[in-house]
Image (cartoon, rainbow, N blue to C red):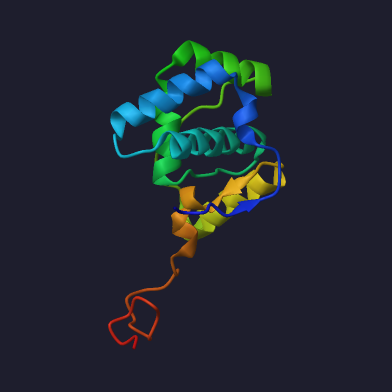
Length: 153
């Protein structure tokens, strides 16, 4: 069993009612049959924390691919998503995929770190299992004896 690492904070799953959360968990388990109910429930929470942090950020944030899958599941329930955004933030939080200028916003790892910082600063629990890219090095294929380098003993 994997233990999720969390920073103490508010459980973001409390941002929506249990019945809506159960629907989103079910939708994700239908799409990804190997996803446990417990992990799907945690994933809904990480998505909600991301959306909340995005609503209050003056800079673009970026979900991990897995968190983005959970966001898509919520977006498919357009009325519930719109109501959530209006009630929680007073405005709709748009999903705007695209590439950001690296010079202006930093690379992928920097953008993801800013996102995780924003989630934490917003006061939500952070579950590292849903943000695996943070463990990746921001280097090239230099093979300088990194843990995944062919030179690594």
